[in-house]
Image 1 (spheres, rainbow, N blue to C red):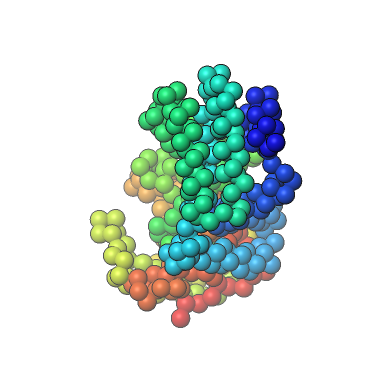
Image 2: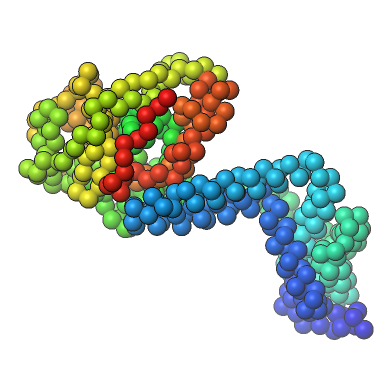
Length: 438
């Protein structure tokens, strides 16, 4: 009777998937859903995807209310550790638990075969005779029912029968070959490029110009959506999506003076602002920017690094440095800055920021090639960053490979810094000074 039911219903079904569903009982459907969720959880992409989704929620919350990071940061770290452990367990099971891995692979191969058969059958349905359609339906149904409980050997035997039917009835109609494979790769690359170009892009901190907010080896996500999407291969932003850059934002930009370099700095002036510099004092539109002393001797790790001599993984080239730590407030944004009394690097004068551009400075005020000093161009003139050169707004630290932390004894003092994970680019306002290195 089951075969008759399938044969009668299959020709009227809209797709092979619908024809197969018509052969399943409610118990079959529940068992199949459970099995598929279990198999999704076994994928190495599962912990990565879950962590990414939770991270996006965390990012949205912290961006809208920075003070929430004070109590969300610890559970986010714990959740991240759980996802890393989840991923590590999956890797271990793949190599150590052979029966577990054999069943996982058999189910994975069966699911891929079911998807391929359904795609080809639906595509060439007009060329299939009713008997061929019924055979594909019955053997697909048998494989679907075998997924929850069958052994790897039984799954492969059932898969072999479906594959034989596919080759008998559909192989002669299939011409795509390398073209289908190529289109799949193109689609995957297009999605990756879309995410990287429009939404989020990672950026690694290569120098100490943003200390202590960002340390060497920190990696941040850049929100490329907030200010507007740049047209590909141009420095043009046709329209603002959420808002234009504002004072206090930390931005990543393509240096207009050295186009082959990307910089990360803090916006201190926007179009129409008049900035005045006198020694250590900064005024925006005549108003002095508040900077309160936190500690006169703040120590931090710096690194001897030159582009002409890249650092070796196992060479400890970190050294301790000292500076004055202050807490600065730009409009509503509070953040740390460093002023080195032993190596002052100030700029006196006044400048007006043109419309459609911003004026940027590093938080490490005496060690930053920023708008005060021509953005490293050597001209000595004030330089601005046009909106079209801005790649996006730096959000939070998602990875920190700096001095100390896990495995630092192996990799020349550089280790995984869990203490810096998920920190935003600004302060809630009441935080104490950053910890002093040992």
